[in-house]
Length: 196
Ligand SMILES: [Zn+2]
Ligand SMILES: [Zn+2]
Image (spheres, rainbow, N blue to C red):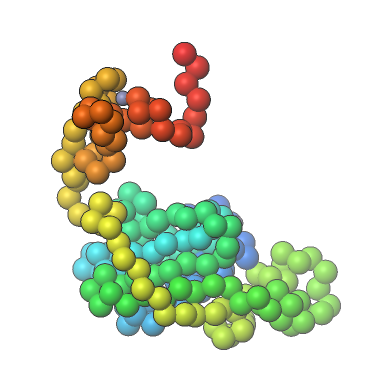
């Protein structure tokens, strides 16, 4: 693995600053790579090896993306917003997967390390750099089954909505009364509300 300091720096540049979440994300990703025996996750031959599910859409996610090279565009980073500081790292070659979550006692241990400091942000940044993996994280081995349509690889075939004619990637279309429809035309819940 690259030096941890340069990983923090790179992730900080990607994220905008080196905050406590970045430290956690970088350390989590490094631990996962070590457990999977991946030395250079960002190299072209390793890019297809790791797939990551993050359980939070905050700072740590950018740290994980920066270290692993997993990204939504490569289909190797899935954001499940459970609001939990945890991520699961699946090795697609071995099918082994580890879920790494932040230890429930990590905040208290961090504060105990720097009793003289008052700025909690500063405490967490410094403590999370120094604490051991065992103090910071809980690791469990898990199994992840990835549906074919979630896998990285060449773009899928496309179809078109029979009402609005927008292109849809195969597997995402909705069939209603024998018609191929997009979510909007099928009256499925959307993240936006059309104004007309
Ligand atoms: Zn941040
Ligand atoms: Zn449509």
